[in-house]
Image 1 (cartoon, helix red, strand yellow):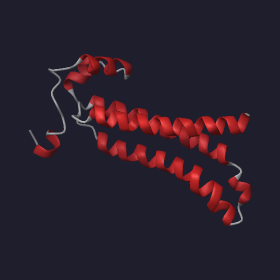
Image 2 (spheres, one colour):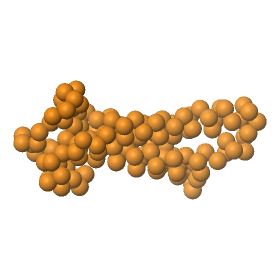
Image 3 (cartoon, rainbow, N blue to C red):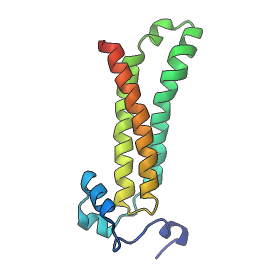
Image 4 (cartoon, rainbow, N blue to C red):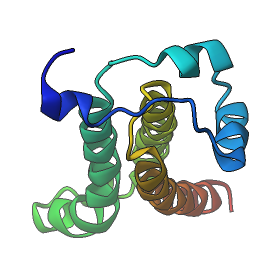
Length: 137
């Protein structure tokens, strides 16, 4: 078919579990697409999603509270929620898109990657909620 290393990352769809069916329904992946599979780049999207999520955490815990005030830019540091909320929403979008990409590709590590994504989504969602409370509370 192609590169054996790449091909080994993808699995057939003949032996789907009930959990797979539920996950595909939640992710809105039609059976015909999931059965066909796609060799899009789920690993590349994973990297992008993790970079954006990491940027969100770095902004919240390093740059805004410590680095900007140390550089004398305390006024900008007070804009934490205004900066963090949009970055967090973008990160959440790419995290969900990344989960879908692994499932669309029929990747053999789709469950493991889904768990990693869900953990990251939980952390970023917490930060967005804290920012919303800070902004409106």
